[in-house]
Length: 73
Image 1 (cartoon, rainbow, N blue to C red):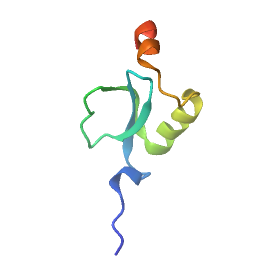
Image 2 (image 1 turned 135 degrees about the vertical axis):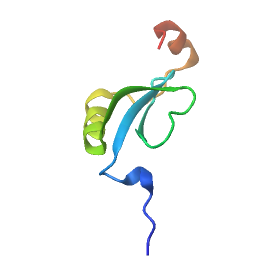
Image 3 (image 1 turned 90 degrees about the vertical axis):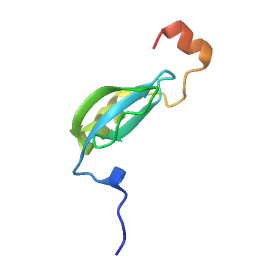
Image 4 (image 1 turned 30 degrees about the vertical axis):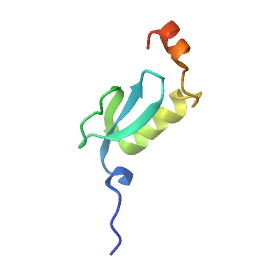
């Protein structure tokens, strides 16, 4: 029997996290938010969080250290 990755379960509630470089991550609520990240959306069902990411994460390139200082993320 194939073991499913718990991060891929579309039935679970998730958070959308952001870090200082404006990178986003879909994160299941059963896991503690990792250091350096903070929630910006959720908890909501995984498909709702994915839709939020599609709508709000326009540029997947991380900020450079200089960009991060100037934008105070």
